Image 1 (cartoon, rainbow, N blue to C red):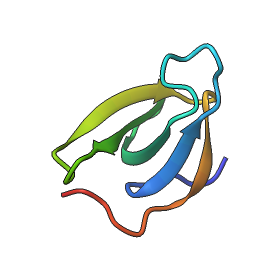
Image 2 (cartoon, rainbow, N blue to C red):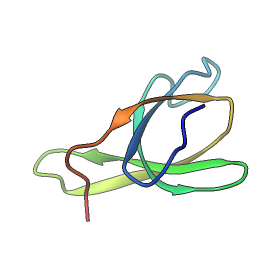
Image 3 (cartoon, helix red, strand yellow):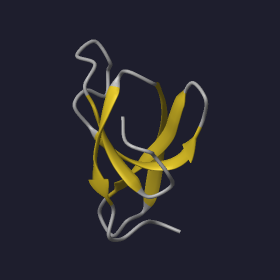
Length: 68
C-alpha cells in the first residue's frame, strides 16, 4: 500500500461494505485504517465522514482540492 497521508484519495474495495465503491479523501491515518470523508453537494454543504479498516480500500491518488 502507498504511504497514506491527509489529502490522499482512496476507494472502498470491500464489496460487503455499505459505502462500496465510494471514493474518500483521507482526513486521518490510523494504525487500523483511515478516517476519510466525501463532500456532499450542492455547494459543498458539508462532509460525510467514514472510518474503514486497512485492506478494505485502495489508494487512488492525491486530491487537488480538499475541504477545510
